[in-house]
Picture 1: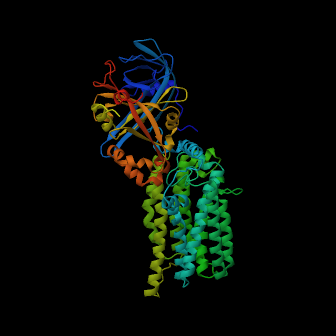
Picture 2: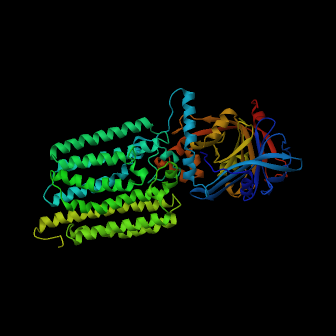
Picture 3: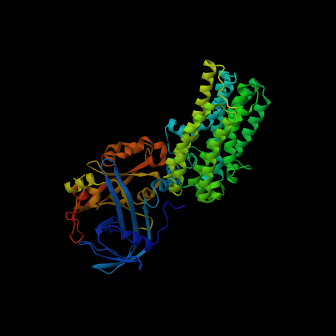
Length: 460
Length: 163
């Protein structure tokens, strides 16, 4: 993969014409490059240029000569922007005013290839550099990050909110029904977090193995994986070991909780969760590669997490309320994946990862978002109206403006991965804040239950 | 080391961007816009490992030139210079070795410190090598016009070093 798009000689000359002057360069008799600013006359259609030989020099006709244009816009107090440059190579003939016959070109314009994409496309060059440095020194030389930053990046720790929110809601619902145990509550949070960390890391392992992360040249802080393997920060083997370690840790905590609760339901939830989590990217299931990633995420980070936490607290008792409460959370967490897949869709398509944004048109994907996010809030309201959810859970409706903000941001930024970053950020916050408000609703139920025991907070 | 002509040193200090030209494996010039960092004796440039092809070229052929040509990048000055010299790639510590030049870099691009604090977002960009250029010959156009012959100063001869 080239780090910059192909530029033929004619295109190079066309671009060169946009610069106020050109820099002619050649290698002199002593072997040093010489560069002189000139005003070239450019004929892009003819693939030629001409310029007056700079005084005091002879431009050689027996070797390649280049014409370069370079531009920045100074930004005092910041640095500069509007970076672009182009170089066209060719041969000159004649003397005095010499004729330049263009042959090939190279360049970069950050208005065409954003810096982050340019950097991403150049990651293989960095790997090549470190490989050469390692061979030269006879010992592995790798790029580095501080332990804290590396942990943050490798595990995608900030996304743990997707787990913690439904687990806390499940615990809170159990508490409103008189079941709460601090030790098992903490163990549930820890175990569920291990599950998500295992999924996050194994996701990178399987996406790398199947070429999806390598094919993605427009990752963002919300999409495209952690990239630690692609950047050489952590080896594939280390990531596989880490994922295994997290799965084992999650399994151990799960077994402890199973022993404490003695719940068959928890066993079923755990087994289904393991299959959904691992099968998210791992063959043969590969849910996300089949357009089922959203369903897997909704099930895993909605009902399974919420009901699992509830069942631990109630020692195996199941109920409809935690399931109904999990529906809006499940839909909103699925929408995090759904929106994050939008900037990844070209790379995903190349890697055969047939996500929903790969399969469907822009209009369909945006409509899909609108329908689903509406369904999340409707599910909440219906849950309250039919008396399955308490009235204070309606606090979650306060996040509707955020949903509108995401919806409105999708269309103008659909083809701009970096413009979409802010929209993805709001979408992540939507799930977080909606979940927190639902949690606050249950805390209100708990408090009112303590101060006004007779007060009925359910309709119907 | 001979003294760099004062106007050229001023250009180096002012320039937000210069054009580094190296010689590739086919013997042709390849030009890269980079921030020149002048410490009063040598010219330094830094290159991310992401864009390290130039480093490969320099390691095979250390003869380079650095041009300061863009009036916009030097605060409106119209004089121009090309410095020919021998380059050396310093890659002892790609993670932090280059940071000794951060104060000079920051003076030209203040935002770099902000980006460095968030290096977790773009870790490979901040894995860097230094390019140290020992100037050998300076071509200086006081009027910046190619129809005027440049003043040529041979720094190696002035300092008594072998060219």
